[in-house]
Length: 265
Image (cartoon, rainbow, N blue to C red; front, top):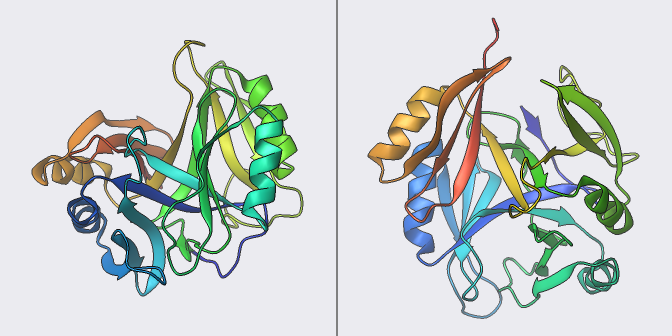
């Protein structure tokens, strides 16, 4: 388990899902992961936003979808010092601005962008996951893309990320590093400056996307409870040593990958 108090610019710092019915979605995920919910608003009345908390520490957000065309998929946000300046760099590097008028949450300035392959992600200046890498909390985000080279150029220009590759069953996976960053867990098998990973899509024409992963105590139990709560199991639990993993979704189809660490794997 990690408790974090701050994130440097360029580090993934927050995950959220934007939904047509945020209260229903927040209730689903809170019941599934054991969160307490806190409703948050900006300085002006606006759409509802719910923050999931574990032991009084923020772990994730559920908000109102701002416009048609913004899917309820979970979004990963990267910390930046200046949202407008980052938008300008992203557009110049071939990205696309999706929405820079998201409702303020606790005074935060946020925006949604898409990389050149269409994978949507967020940038913000304040919201942050204060509890990570434990059951019920976010552990890692993965970019699934059909053009790893283009992604390397784009995110390197935007956030200063560097890369290294490793083999998983004959597939070259890419780790994103943020030089100078120190996160993760002492026992993790990858360097602690790793901020995300990338998997190449088998079909280069398939939509690129950012996925999020949460740790859980029991992947089979989480899958069963997701269905009982009105969600679905996208990918049934299976062993991927040292984890047992599954992909689940809420009633609106917003997916999350879940991983159970199997200590005797």
